[in-house]
Amino acid sequence: MPTPSKRPIVLVHGAWHGGWCWKDFARLMRARGHDVYTPTMTGLGERSHLMSGMINLDTHISDIVNVFKWEDLTDAVLVLHSYAGWPGSGAIEHIADRLHAAVYLDAFVPEDGQSNLAMQTPERLKIINDAIARSDVSRPVPKAEDFAIASAEHCAWVNAKMTPQPLGVTFSTIKLTGARDRVPVKAYIRGSGHANPGFDSFLRKYENNPAWRTWDLPCGHHVMLDMPDRLADILSELSA
Image (cartoon, rainbow, N blue to C red; front, top):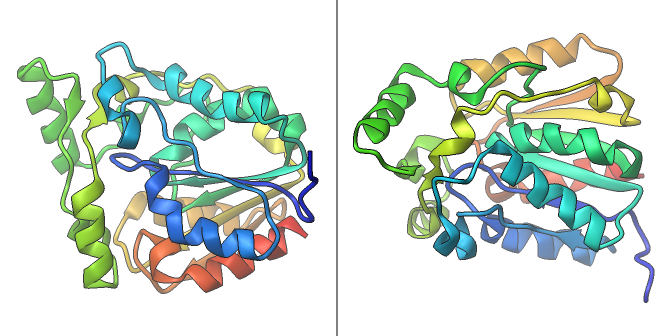
């Protein structure tokens, strides 16, 4: 089996998305010599036919862990976009020894005992409660315009691709033991053109933590679409 010339990179999508959102960016990183993986979590994207009320946070944690297990990945860079900060943090509990870097890309960085539900905005909370009242197993997609995507073409593409998010992942309480702290390289990248006070608070928290590296980029939530070259430079630097 050929050995990649640089560290492998695992790119994990956020809510309503799938591995499809990394398509162009993955091509960019492969051109730089990286072995790139873009898994889609259960119930989303090309796996949306698996949508079920049985999907919870542990399901998505397993989706990420199994990429490392079956692809025999070590010394890898794990990039977690948005919601992926939840299952990604849970996955790190199982794969910390296989990681060179954990990169939170405009993402949630949960602590032990927290649930995604507690970090929802009032607007999103109403959508979730309405879905519960209808006995839905998923919550509907938002508009891509909500993410402050710079390009109208990219915005239309995201609108056409998003699928409902499994509702069960919202209620799970995450169990963390500090494995994230043992990852050699940790980073937080903020796309500050997308208004999100929670993500702003993560940036401020880790700006003052010498164990983390941080970037504040003038773009929307989809950094991989708005500023792909800059993101590629950052990931190349972190993987060096």
